[in-house]
Amino acid sequence: MLNLKKFIKRFLFFIVLLTLFIFFNNSSIFTKNRTGDPILLAHRGLAQTFPMEGITGETCTAEIIYEPEHAYLENTIPSIEAAFAYGADIVELDVHPTKDGEFAVFHDWTLECRTDGEGVTREHTMAELKQLDVGYGYTADNGETYPFRGKGVGLMPTLGEVLEAFPDKQLLIHIKSNDAEEGVQLANYLANYPNILENVAVYGGDLPIVTLKEEIPQMRVMSKETLKSCLIPYVAVGWTGYMPNACKNTQLHIPETYARILWGYPQKFLNRMDAVDTRVILVAGNGNWSEGFDQVSDLERLPKNYNGGIWTNRVDVISQVPGNY
Image (cartoon, rainbow, N blue to C red; front, side, top):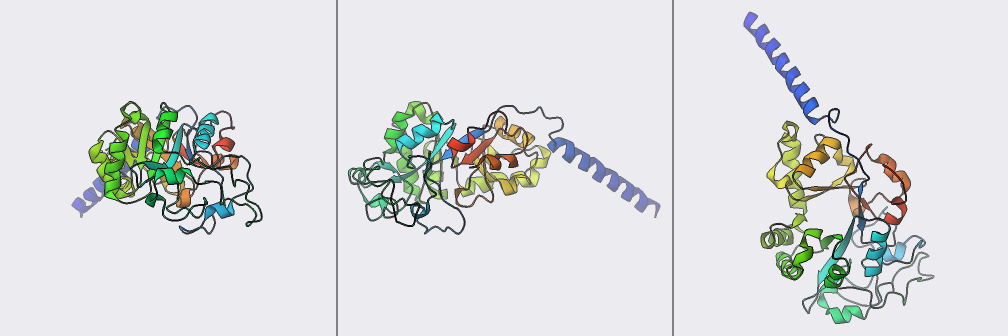
């Protein structure tokens, strides 16, 4: 009986010590306050936005845009230029390979929603895609008016044109398929721009990201698999301060709903990721359908002194807020 009591006391003492260790090892109390504003990642440049409620992968979002507040069309050089002018630190853009070996900067798998073209985007040549009006399908009043028709002809750029236009800017390229060969193709394409590779990150399907990383090991990449490979072990053992190898030199897109379960979030977590050259981007809500911090009121949900990355569809709105968010 005496030995049992000693065991219980020692066990409880151990639990107390372990609890204190976990708390102080992951608390921001003794962590130096981070300074500066959040890193702004502008989704598709400066784009027309739309309500997120009820959309699916089949929704033509060009047909449900809000009343336009600016004249820019997503994934075009003017929209990317405008996003940087409004204060974006990184601009995200979408790419599709073309029949003639180019990469077209365009979001949709097919052309009918946004353009006056037809068919699968990647089944066209770049010359054919250059003929299209990328503003053709946008309407805010159920088709009564189409405010951008005729204004987007020839505005679909190649990836090379974007890279050359913004050689010193941070870009995040989105591969829209899960084709392993596309990762190799993109790696070969990017090899033509060796001086700007350090400014480029890529995310997309698991298979193309694997092959891209094999071809360009120093490239910052992200996929669902790389995200899970980092965060699952981090949640399991990150309380010790151990950093899984999969968390090094990568990119993490973390829905704000789940961020709070990460050890040391926000300050110590961000410091740990900074130490291994990993970029953290906070996505609004559950992370569905590219939800962003798009209104000034959204910024009130950010932790105090948060200066990691935030995903936004309206960099023109939130960049106007002065000081710490």
